[in-house]
Image (cartoon, rainbow, N blue to C red):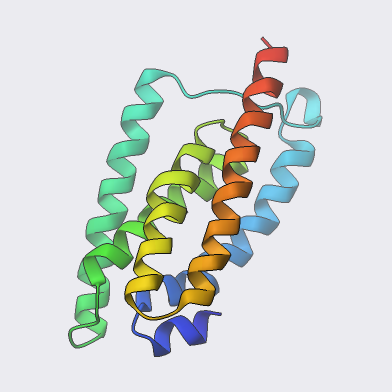
Length: 154
């Protein structure tokens, strides 16, 4: 998938597949299993306002760095600002998911999946738009499930 994305000049998402997703998913699995109290399963929780603001600042910083990095590496990649916004939101979403934060699903639903559906339609890759539509349905379902789970743990 990463190679294909680089070939259609959605370079930031292409590199995201190689550099970020595999390591964070391995780490996330460990955190889910051992990250709770006394090394038990991590429970679903929500961000407080201070962490929400820090998360938004983190997302904006990643977005800006991604744009700078890929405009340096590539000569005029298509849709870089849009692509970088999806990458930044994906990194935030996956990081929040690693720590079982309900808000991860907000990032997966809106700035990642919804935006990617439109981007892939624009880049003439309808199969990826369909894939991200399925991901969007999964994100909405996950959001509902985690909200229920989080309310049970309060």
